[in-house]
Image: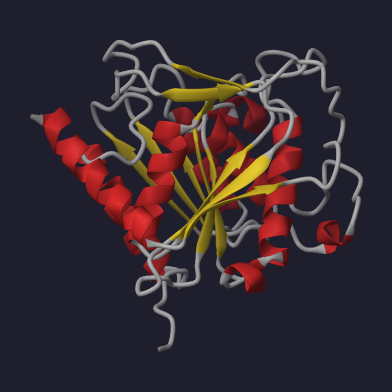
Length: 304
């Protein structure tokens, strides 16, 4: 019954997305991306393996993308009558090896469209290149994410977006990427190449969901600037892939820095729940997040 209910809900979300302005794909860099060796072969799509319930909440296979050398933005516009002018850049997870394109990309964009938000999926560079060690975040995705924020802000007028209401959401490794982007705006991780790179790469808010890497990075002295934008953190208490300490410790670090932050940790919840409806308590996180965005002033109706 739960799978049937989800199928119906996804069809509804899909119809809403199709009722909007459609999708546009924009190349992130004008030429070869920074530090890109271009030696990993052609881009590939494949399905994940079915997983076990103790590891993840959604166990069925989902679409993955890997071997990304040309990062892009895929833009999902909401229906015109619902459009609030807000936009959110989406960073799917995948351990910096793959991109979980469906469950943490397309489905997230469709959910955002129901709120009147433009969803913009960032297809960042994966897998890790040979000079990026295991166990720590890959550096090239942060270059792509910083560039993405600047590009969306630079194109805001053309794309019907408010440049002061651009958020970033990420899941798992993408959750780390979201918070890294939100807290690393003072210095770019690449040499600026054009006028876009003169535009601020600081998002206006961040939503890291079951993030990884944060605990170890904070223990190693990761800095959280006082100017970090508001953050909404989400995690499962039984997450064995990225333990909830990542989000809990980041919440405390944000509060110490004087940054507005909200934390939701859901009991009996594992990894990879995305935005799919559920009658479990974690199924309420998307509604709580929408309330938070409204309370923060990021979701406001356009003037008619």
